Amino acid sequence: METTLAEGKSSQFRQGMQAGISIAIGYMPIALTFGLIAKTTGLGLAETVLMSLIVYAGASQYISLNLLALGTGIFEIVLTTFIVNIRHFLMSASLNEKAEKDKLWKKALYAFGITDETFSVVATKEGTVTTSYIFGVNAVSYGSWVICSGIGHVVGASLPESLQESMSVALYAMFIGLLVPALKKHRKTIWLAGLAAIFNSVFSLVLKLSTGWAIVSATLLAAVIVEFFYKERGEADNG
Image (cartoon, rainbow, N blue to C red):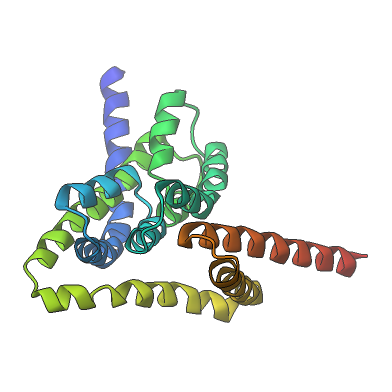
């Protein structure tokens, strides 16, 4: 019976890895670009790989590079990335209802590997999801991100210095690429981005806050105002 149980877990793990292959392929160019830009930002190979190993959050890692390039303090960087990643609490809580009952340490371990993409794959699987299946999805996705981050850094080190310096432009191109689709779909995003930009300008140019605190304060204030506005409008519509 124990052999059958082990085989079942192995089968579920393989199924998870197969389901995660598409995520792994999608992560490759993004992780490679992250490694390239990390090199131009001044991070070493070990630091780049370690960030992907510990943080494992694409948008937050790109934001961290930008903040590091601007000379932002550690506390502001941590706080900003925490705000960006706070949605992972909701995703993990949602998967907890769908996943099979298991030991807490196992749930905590695979919760670390939950990203927008892995969440989508696991959440859309029919029926109860096994722990082995989630680990399979996470393993291939996580491995792709970490390995390709390192490869991107190594490749970046072999590029001409002038090309390495120009790669920093890709950081802003990536942010625009993430923002534009959201602007087309949701008007709320337009208000959020616009207000955050205005507040950031006021905080940094008028109030002379440091770059990190200006970004954090502008993001929080814009999010609170936009959410309050849409909540009030929703209650008015329902009334």
